Length: 113
Length: 117
Image (cartoon, rainbow over all chains, first blue to last red; front, side, top):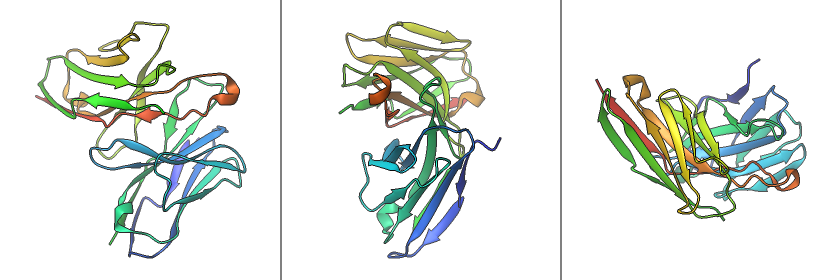
């Protein structure tokens, strides 16, 4: 099993460009999350999904959109990238009947110039 | 909503010494407190957790204690080794009934632990 995977691993964008980060999981977990990690600020929740076709805002949703058309995939979109969105992005999954552990993907390092 | 404060932000110890990281939380409804370890360039991974009906939990060299009254919990690492060097995150979540459990963890800011050989 691959677990939680993220595509791409690295990306450099110019201000104003758009991109989509893909998170894929083969664990059949119901819930999925997108976090950003910045030095000294921990892991901050951007958006999350409790099931296929549903999404909700987290702590820092501005400038991002998400979609969960299939249970195994959770997409994070940046419509018009800004330097403030330079960060490491982590996807995570959670099984509601499990041990309450969140399983993280390997991360995507995004730089916006 | 829940707010989790974590201290210290950096911690340096000599190999073999103990390390303690402390977190406080604001929401008295929180009843599950996990700790995640993130090695350099890697993903965060769960190392230990505790529920509010337990005051202490141990797993080999690591332990977590919880004081519900004071709303704080701590991670203790004994006999530290260089491989313990990492960023540690505490988190809190209220685990309610299935319909209200979104699994949303609120993380502390992280503690960078350096173990000097």
